[in-house]
Length: 128
Figure 1 (cartoon, rainbow, N blue to C red):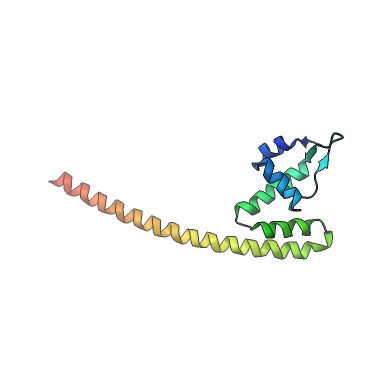
Figure 2: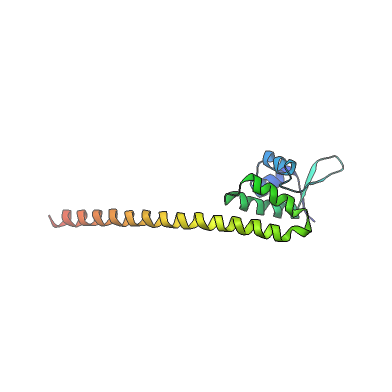
């Protein structure tokens, strides 16, 4: 089993050391194992959990819901609650994606219009 120092865990996950400490302190991340010297030692499972937490955070899940997800993950009887929380988040992400796609279409339409204007202007210049 691979273990990671806090600095290595931060490098692998892209989280800062402060965020790793915060996630553990707030119960978002389960308690991390400690070495005999008292230093945190992250496991592959911790790294995997952090990767998923990063996914949730980068897709806009608020800290309160991350905290709730962390709490739920410590109780095996909460699978339905976890599914419900993640389904709710997935629906919110879908709404954001749909809105971004609509905005992207508007941007593409404007670019096509500008390119058409440029092409017409260039054609007029070459025919003069």
